[in-house]
Amino acid sequence: MLALCLVGAASANALDAGTVLALAKSVNEVLNNIRNWIMGVLAGLATVFLSVGGVRYLMAGGDPGEVEKAKTAFKSAGWGYGLAALAPLVVAILKGIVGTGS
Image (tube, rainbow, N blue to C red; front, side, top):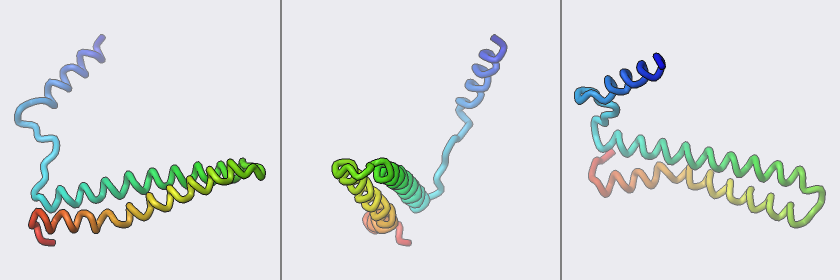
């Protein structure tokens, strides 16, 4: 019960009107954060697909259907890594559209 009261008190303090949880100094910083987030998510998902493809390939035991599923997972991982590599280009285009410069 005491822990619940402490959590409630901490939540009330965190939601104080003067508390700023996140503050971006410029649009450029926001776009850079978006780029980093996109790259992280895509690279993480690609790594998962690469791992799943590797495990499927190892466990296929010569079954052509499972080998094909593993190859599909490898292709998906390649697309994910490729899109993660292109994320800075996408953000650069957005910066050009918004007009933030570099």
